[in-house]
Length: 146
Image (cartoon, rainbow, N blue to C red; front, side, top):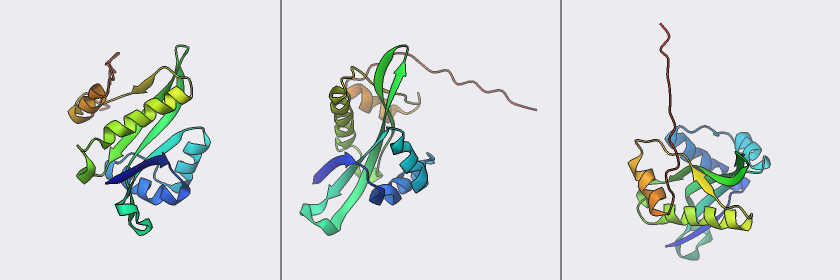
């Protein structure tokens, strides 16, 4: 299995939009994706190339990387990392995170951050297995309007 990790191009937008819609994540128009990239963010795709056959290339996952700053600390923020279900648990998520770390290093950043829902055990296991540490928790609050 030959997988290439690269920055997304406009030709990839339809596949990215399909991935977003499968998780109800927004950014579901070509214009929204283009705007996201024009703001200095990266969309990284994992492209499966069946035996180096140009006809059999398929986007099997993607990840967004956003340069951010919080409390005077500059970092890369990982968001919307998703893989097609039949390609999960094969080490591809870990490769995405290695790509994020390499990109942070290239930009002279010391941190890569991610936020994970507490109930998302699979994602937490992926991130912790890739060296991420829990540094705080988010509190989500809701008020019911009657």
